[in-house]
Length: 193
Image 1 (cartoon, one colour):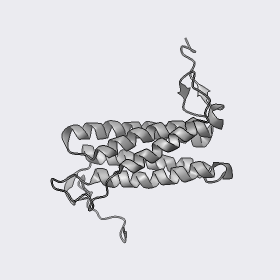
Image 2 (cartoon, helix red, strand yellow; image 1 turned 180 degrees about the vertical axis):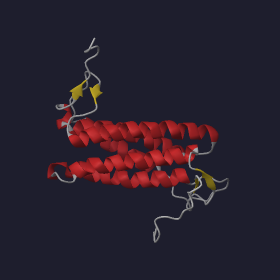
Image 3 (cartoon, helix red, strand yellow; image 1 turned 90 degrees about the horizontal axis):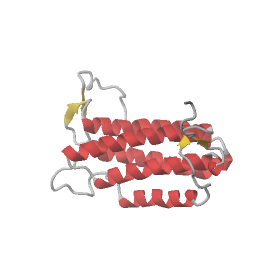
Image 4 (cartoon, rainbow, N blue to C red; image 1 turned 30 degrees about the horizontal axis):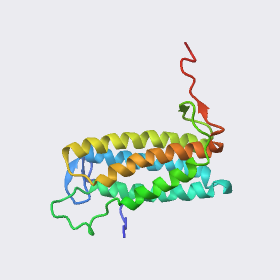
């Protein structure tokens, strides 16, 4: 269990931070950027939940977002702990295929109730949906960073799969919260020419 007794350590005052295995790296390192972007998305989901938690009609969506927020801490822990050769998989917190499958199941259930898309949609609509579209774009950035990290270092493949599926999930959930797509704002190509 995590116990934080001191919030500041001064350890990062010179631009370095510690990874999950204790290795000190530059705060601008790609691995740090990847899990920092995941953390940023988690904060935006928290803003969405400020709206879903207040509305009993959104209780199921809020519960999904709560599970996702916990998963994002798992994803951050996975990304901040480099994979070591001969690693005992039971000792490191790594993303699991079941987490990706849960997202897929939720996507399929929500998507079955949505109006079919006949145009791209603009981020917006109800406040919770707008925040989820913002979180989706941030998760897409995390995907790019994780993908780039994979080119340089070993990374749990489930981490990238989870980020990829999560961006889809947030898109579908945003539409779901926009009155099952009825309140989506459609893109009008060339509207301002």
